[in-house]
Amino acid sequence: MNYGNYPFYINFDRIPVFNFCTTRHGGISLWPFESCNTGFNTLDSPEFVKQNRLIVAEKTGIPVECFVFLRQVHGDKILYIEKGHCGNALKVPVLEGDGMLTDQPGICLSITLADCIGIAIYDPENHVAGICHSGWRGCLLNICGKLVDKLVERCGCKVGNLIISLSPSICYKCYSISREIAENFFEKYGNFVLENKQKYYLDLKGIVISQLFEKGAVSANIVDAGICTAENTHIFYSHRAEKNTGRFVFGIYLT
Image (cartoon, rainbow, N blue to C red; front, side, top):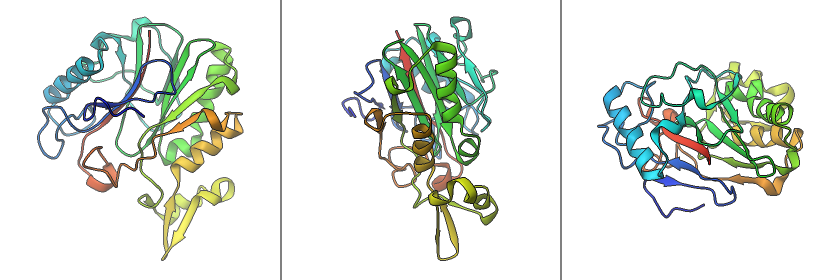
């Protein structure tokens, strides 16, 4: 990972198209959203969010009209994005879904995060990109596996060629869940539910990686940020650690 532009963004060098993950720094939002909150789905001032998105566009060098955001609902809907979907980055998203893919240049697929794991995928052979986010609901729905399926079915991608990056996200040590939620994972993903002192903890990253392997992803092509958002709230937002907080952006840009 290249931290050269910290605190504004981090990028994965293994992916040969521009990709990035913003931090919580460099914006104008006030406490508790300080300072580069990019989520309209927060209690922050919409004007601050708009200005922060303009700052992200400036710092990444991506025209703001190229960004596409979704109204994320923790489901498994994956959208094919075309140029006509661009141009609305400074407005509350109307497109509802939790994953996107495109093979059209000039589009920056962008999701907002604050503990969920973001998955960005690039196929260098077909010049195709995809992105999604997965919390516990997304893991149950296997949204990352469904994104891989979409890339194969719609764009002719070969799974073995896919280069996949995993964003900063909450680690299993910090992600406690209720017994009720844990029960949903026992049958298929029991190895990723940990019990300690009558508390349950969920390994989101472990589940996502296992789902990618099930689809045929190559271990050497999976790049993990290896950063826990809850343990690093001085760099990233964490809903679990902070409750009322902002969102950072994870994106991939086809040119």
